[in-house]
Amino acid sequence: MDSDFLNRWQQLFYALFCAALMLANVQFLTVNGISNESSSIRLYHFVSAGLVLWMPLAWCLRTLPWTVHVFFITVGISTLAAYSTYGFSGRSILIAYALFMACIGATATHRLGRERVLAAVRHVFTALHFIIVLRVLFYLATAGDVPRAAGGRPDMLFFYAGGNNLESTWLSISVVLFSRSKLFAPLTLSAAFVAVVYGSRTGLLLTGASVGFVLLTSPGRVKWMLRGIVLIAMCVVFLIVSEVGQSIVERFENIGESGEYGSSSRLDMWETAVDAIRINPFGYGIGNSQEVIRQRQSMRVDDINNVHNVFIQMALDGGVQTLVAWLLVIGHLFIRTWKRPVDLAVPGFLIIYLCGSMVQFTGYETFSWLMLGILVADLATAPATVPAQPQATPGGPTTICSRGETHSDSHSRTADSLVKAALIRVERPPQKWTRPER
Image 1 (tube, helix red, strand yellow):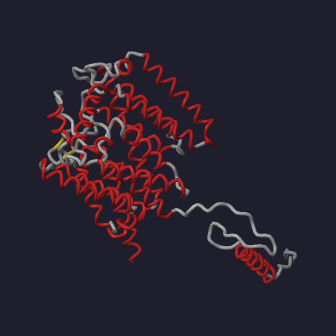
Image 2: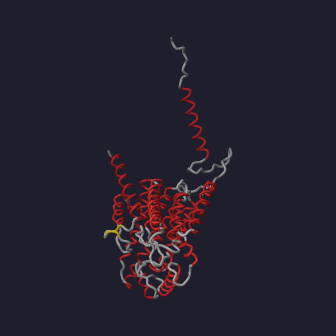
Image 3: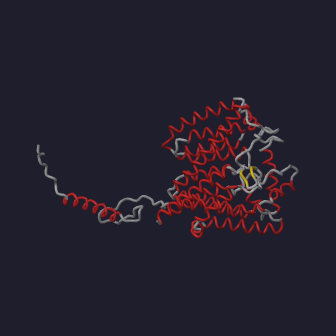
């Protein structure tokens, strides 16, 4: 009875976890209806909150490395101190939600296993690729192009509040998770196709970065991967030279030009943000960066809530001390990953995310902290790498195997198993053959 209840309880957790993952990608569903306003409360916030029923909070806090605790304590204290001077912002809830998603990732890995959790994440991103490509193909077939605003940017209802660029970026980052799947080449083509149609430079560059990471970490699959990459490159070149891909060609040609949306606005924001950090290196509090930039530069920033660079954003919100704590988290995790034999899909996801964080994101994204929690739980169960040592010679010193036993213990266990097998054969009497009666 108890085991059946536990199984049903785990199945309910898995179903709710998958629903939260899918809704985390459908951010236009809010409590106020369909909206892409960044300040709206999303539906996935409520669904993911239900996962707390399965969360062993004390275990999660023990499993998270000390660097993560230092980061959240630092950003929390710095933000509260900044609010006393620069005013309170409701976006401070991002701190608690990021910690919550890290605990959810660790809990899901602990209760369901890493493979099942990653399978759920892959299923969600596969569905997302499929839906977005179908939508783009529909617009291309009916209107010849996706709807665009006056500035040339795609103008439609996107899955993410960040618009077309963020939608393309997450598709590109997700490709890393399929390095051992037959869907790797099709989904890479899907991400490149969407990036070209949307005119997303970040999406196209991160697609290339994902492919490069997979090729570098999967030497045994280079042959078939290269064939797929060549096919993808041919398709991308065809799209770029066609009329559909002219927007991304123009965007690459106009990088840095005055008035060009994207690169010039980012450069202006970064320059203003760095000046603001010099004036106050202790931070302005999460959510106040928009007002800080508005006061210091003439450009309109009403439609942004971040400076499109996680590292500058960390220093702007929580001060230089928060940026140092964030770099400590990154360095510590990758050092631990290097020392332990873990699958590289999750570290690859985080590496490509960090590449994209140079021009995107706020640092408190749902999937980044979820993946961090999965990696932490995986590292907690992965055995430490033990260097290979020569076997002991007769009369010489014994060495330690990877399982923690001596070679002499290992040999004795093998000899015992062979003796038992021989005794079983001896105790079993041979069957005498008799002629069957007619």
